[in-house]
Amino acid sequence: MNASRFQEITEQYSQLKLAIVGDFCLDRYFEIDPKLSEVSIETGLEVHNVTRVRTQPGAGGTILNNLAALGVGEILPIGFCGEDGEGWLLERALKERSHVCLDYFLRTGKRKTFTYSKPLIMASGKPPRELNRLDQKNWSETPAEVSSLIAESIRTVSDRVDAIIVMDQVDVPNTGVLTPIVLDCLREVARGNPKLPVIADSRQGLNHYPPFSFKMNANELQLMVDSGGTMSTAAIESEAEKLAASNRRPAFITLAEKGIIGAAPGEAARHVSCFPVRGEIDIVGAGDSVTANLAAAMAAHSTVPESMELAMAAASVVIHQLGTTGTADCGQISEMLK
Image (tube, helix red, strand yellow):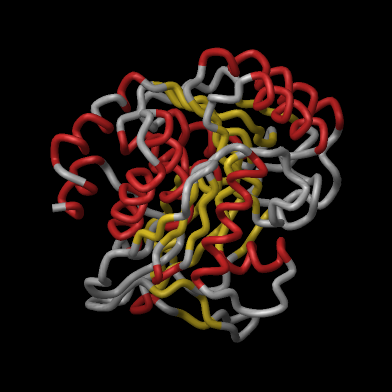
């Protein structure tokens, strides 16, 4: 991609309105100084002394962070948090991002705030080392009244956004935002707006999802098509073409260090390689940066290959940011593409 085409696409970002429908969580980083380690008198166990606590939006919030870094004009998170301390922190973290409208973000006492607590050993001269993560999740089904409020918000904004990103982060079906009520609403919106980019990513797989633009990794594709083994590049390209034709929307398959494959309806699949590794890496958040950049680029009317090229450049920036779930702005992406 040459510089003029990059500018032509990215200069539209400030005019875009993008909605993110899905699971938003609080990422809490607890930085531990190993030099201050103690032994508990009561238990005899090692005590980790935390010298700094950082918080930022995670899951759907990581996508939001990346859209904000790209300079997207308005970002509409559609999801929920609990009426708890973690929810207060999550809302504060969302408000700190540029151009975020929280009018459709629900605070409810019927759900806990999805939280990832990440202890990090911060040893001088070494990359951060993450200890066992502590998670707080909802294990019961999301109440129908909560889902109905989410669906109402989707219908309200659907006619004034340039793209919708669908992000399912939960491990147990129907315990998060993407319940059958919400998916049925999104199906109606997509059917009524066939030119509106709607891109979906789900930890549980996309088998039961409406015909959106699917973004998944190779393992998730293998499970979807029941391939029975590792798929060749040619086989992945063929399946991407079938998905795009069936859903009538672009399909994207990420391949980790091998890049990404994408196909538009009626077109041959294309493969875009990833960028070389330049040192220590942390892959947390790379997939979400890809989703954000694919959505923004498609909303700005880029082609499938152009969208993937931008996404791969952004992912390369993100994986080299250690001890955090990173982002990439347009300047950093431009440098990667030179």
